[in-house]
Image 1 (cartoon, rainbow, N blue to C red):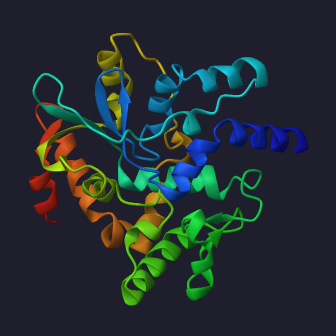
Image 2 (image 1 turned 90 degrees about the horizontal axis):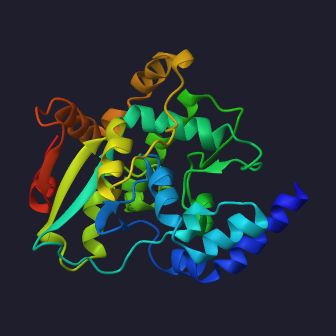
Length: 275
C-alpha cells in the first residue's frame, strides 16, 4: 500500500500542471481523439476513450514504461478551443442508461474501501468544507446499501435546492449526463454552433474504431449479469431517476428507439428539451 501511495505522489508531481488546472480550471469538458471531439462523461465510456488518447502523451508513456502504471485520467484534459472540421462542429456523445450508470458508480466507488478508506464523498473533493452545512449524509462506504446511496443523493439534491446551490456541487460521476452536455456552454464561446451526435454506450467500441480508423476492442464495465435487475428495485423505491435523472432516462429511451441508431441534436434543442 505504501509503495502504491509513493507512486501516486510521483504521478501527481509529473502531472502537477494538470492537477492544478483541474482544481482551478475545469475538470469536465470536450476531449479530442484525432480530429474528433467527444464529450467527456464520467461512467459513460470516459476511461476507455482516455485510454486511446493517452497513448500519445509522453508523460503517460514514461509512467507506463518506467513506473509500470497507466495514469489515463491526468494524461487527458479538456481542450480549450473547438474549431470546425470540414466546415462544421460535430461533437460525439455516448450515453449510458442512468440507472446502470448509477449502480456502476456505487459498485466501483462506494464498495471500494481500498481506494476510499474514509468513504466516497458525493460532493466534489474541493468542496469538502461544505459537507458540515448539510443535514444529509455526504459520504458512503461498503456498509451502505445501494438504496441508502440512492436515497442520500435525492435528499442532498433537495438540500441543494433549499440552499440555492447548483447541481455541479455533486461529484462529477453523479451529475446527469444531459446536465454535463448543457454545462459545456460555460466553457466554449461557440457552443451554439455545436451539433451533438449521440450514440448509446453499447456502440462505444464500434464508433471509436470508426473515428480512429482502427479497430477498438476494449472491455467496458457493465452491470454484472448475476446482479440481474435487482438494483432496479432500489432505484424505484428511492425515485432517484425521477428526481434527478429523468431527462437522461427520456433521452436514452429516444436514442434506443431511433431508427438510425443515433440522435443528432443542436444545443437549442437540448436546452429546450423537456421531461
